[in-house]
Each structure stands twice: as C-alpha cells, then as structure tokens.
Image 1: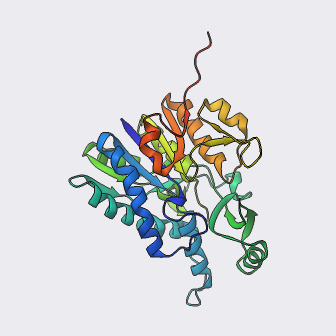
Image 2: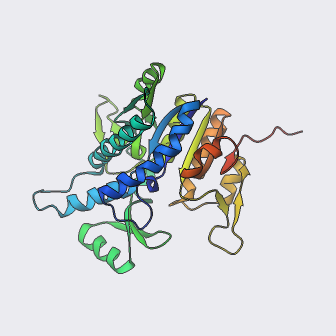
Image 3: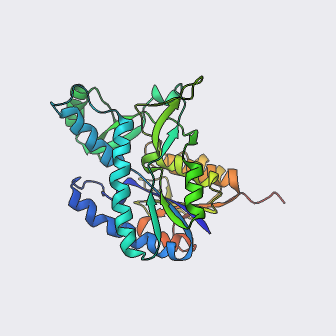
Length: 307
C-alpha cells in the first residue's frame, strides 16, 4: 500500500517548547519510531510542516542588521525544507538500514490572484502573549491572530494548484526510494502566463492540502495526517467535546472546524477521499501504525451508496 504521511509542525517542536536545535533533534526520534514500522510494511512518502521553523527564521531575518530587507517567505521555506529534510533522512537512515531515502526540495504552484493573499490565516512561528504579539506586529509589519493558547503571526496561504516535482517523485518511488518532499506545503511559486517563468511569493502553502494533492497525484491508497491530538473532536474545547472516530467527507465539512487548526486537515482528508475513493485518517504521531491498522485516530472514508 502506498501511504502519504503529513507530519504536523509539532513533530519537531511541541507547543510551548523553545525552538532550539537540540530539542528538535531529540523530538525527531519520535518521528523515526512512528514512521519506521509503517515503512517496513508499506511504501511511504513523507511530508512535514514547518510553521515553528519558518517563523523563527523570519524573525531572525527581520532583526538582522546586515540585511537591507528580510528574506522572503519562499526562500525561508526552502531553508526549512533542507533542514528538516536532513534531520529526517539522517534518523530514518539509521532506523531503516538498506532503505534508499531522499529529501527533495519541492515547489508548489499557486495562483497570484488567490484571495488568500488578501486574507492571511496561516499560523507561523511561536505563540506570544497579546501585548508582545501586538508589539511585534507594529515593529515587523505582521498580521497576528489568536491561536489556542495565545497569539501568533499569520501569513497568506494560497491553495496548491500543482506540485512541480511530481514526475521526479514518481521516478524516485519507482526506483525503490522513500521520498521526503513538499515540506511546509512546498515552496510557493507563481508562473508567468506567457513565459512560464517561476517567481517566489510571500506565502506559506498549507502542508495538509499539499499532501492531499500529492497523494492524489501519486495515486496513493491512504493519506495519513499526523498531529498532536488522537482524534478529530466535535465541539472541541467545550463541555460537549467528543471524539469523531469515523466520518465521510460531507460529515467532516459539516462540523465546521477552525481554519487555523483542524480545518485544513479535515478539508485535506475530505478532498483526497472524494477525488480518489481512497482512505484518509487524522490522529496522533505516536499512534501512526495503529491508525493505519484501524485501531486509533479518525478514519475518513467514502460515503456509502444510497440503498
């Protein structure tokens, strides 16, 4: 079975943790343990988030007196793909002797007129108290929004139209290589309508929506979205909160999950199932093996035909 796995940004940095390199190195072992068992039985393509990492690089770039202007988000996204890809390759290389593993820098085509550029919703970087976030927004020209436990920077998150390296990924898979790609949703680029020339844009593509597109293009059987909760929850954060163990795409959409957290994950799972007839699931990193084997997480399946 071919499985596309989308790792949440929490895979390397848990909420509230300092973004130090040694902490990320320690946390990567959890990823290795979760993914290695699946790789022994299935063909795995791995994607990952980059929210904490790109936020840190953006802040450092904005504060660097040696720069005339901060680095744009597309180039910072490329940097995070290389860093996180290297960490994953190293740890998986040790855990899966004999396996070919490659991290591929990946570009995602977006539309320059996407409405998301006018309405930023994608969280990047760490969580701040409100006054600190407001101060940073004034100094850096950021937009901020409330997250679950504080305030964070938000940036544009245009919809992924096409992953430019899909053919290369196909070739690597055909040669027996485990591929790490589309990190952080891919480096966002637009194409000139006349020449086709590529230009980077100031945005971060949602990694779950990119993972759904990737899984569709690769004809995957299963899309596995791993995050920091064991299930999708209906009425999350209220006294009526309850786990959703099984849902159709329509049922997920009807629940109306927030755009800044579970919403893109639910939409990604729904799109993949609707477009391919395959299965998707959302759940906790440490339960990856159990989720694929139906013992944990929220399964998203096609609707049953009407009787």
